[in-house]
Image (cartoon, rainbow, N blue to C red; front, side):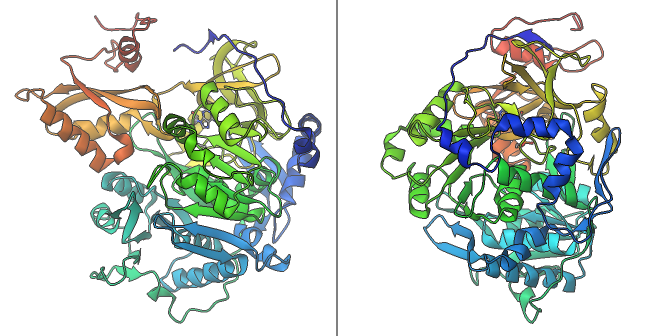
Length: 629
Ligand code: WTA
């Protein structure tokens, strides 16, 4: 697709109950936005005051394009906003965390218990020799110990890098190496659809040839079945023997790194997105409180995994900072049956439910009789994230789950942005297909490749026009890749998405403008999948594209040129699929593989995936002037 094109916009809209706006923390969106525009730094100064600081900042923003420093001179530790302040404010016995296992097992933590366990694990990490600035890699299932350990890192200033436990050994290896992690924290197993999946054996493979790794901490869930054999391994709970409970928070500079999170890029190795303490803490608290409108009695369930930014910001840091009760579960949406999630909402009284379009489309397909079996009256906000919420999915979500009265918050944002950027704030009209408006604090636009603003109805590139506190600060050990975000169009942050706005300034996200495929809400770089394919001895060259998929949004299709001597066969298809599965993980598995003799290329030899895609979808090939004969 070129950078600008016309889009026909539908203008259906739903008006939510005015009570939502009247009762919300944000109040009237347009007023809030105007307040921000009048004094952007004043706005962020106010927001930063809502979290806990050890030393106040001297300056809200220092902008040295494309580098931002927010809240310079200020010091803090994000865990005091997430834990200590609630202890002081009378929330000691309030539930912070409710965990649900696949077999219905339940564990709960009050804020006091969470605070205590975080401090104990923090002391255990210190005893192991972990220091401020050390990188700690996580490869863990979604269990309470995961949340405890990651907050413990933040407590002592260690930088966490969480890797989704569905990734394969090679993907994990690459992330451990890039971050030069000192410690890896894992569990013996994860549980999924009644099956037990060994995580530790994947870690064993992944830490070969990673000289930085000194220790592997293993949470043993299957009691006694694991023998920790090597000198490197430590048992999660044995580490806590004899540690002190009190662990004062490490004083962090506002600009010290809080975590690294890898996200797929358009070339090779994923990018280690770096977030810092002060700006990130401010951004996620702000959006948890003013966009999700978290109140004292809210029970938030964000169905993402902690391996993605959505989990970082809206399972852990945002809602805990806002003092909510957070639900986490290891369950999948359709196992043992597609009623499981709705039963959890009913039973736990979830008030805010945040999921992905791919899950919504799966639920649409299995039928509304499943949610209709349960009482979902506790819900007051339902959200969506990760890919465009198509109008059909919106309508279903709003009608069947929202009962035609609960606001749907379709939130657009990225690993790089750290927090919600575009959504339909509570009380504003909802338009199916549109994510909505920029949140106060954020200025966005749709522009052509030279940065000229596009009129309504004309598609273009989505940009963010000004720095914001929770923006990424760099790409770990690859600052050039960071600068690219701000250099593609001068002075603007280019998000990599195509979008279009309507006459009211509502923004519809149309998809990626680059070589990133979003499969069931998970970002994959075509280059990542291609390099996994060419590793196989039978593959000479490979090109990968995203093709539409009814449930997952997109699926991976691979075109493969075989090495001389290999013949196309179904067996080879299975072998290649399995190979990708083992190296990157099940999310990257090609849905189909086509064997070809050649691939379309530019004269300089670059594969033109755009042409493959257009052919696949019987579309116009577009500009082919650079295509080699
Ligand atoms: C896509 C996830 C349409 C988009 C928080 C973005 C969306 C990428 C939406 C970032 C949405 C996310 N509507 N598209 N509401 N939310 N995206 O880094 O292409 O995993 O650039 O962050 O997901 O994915 P990431």
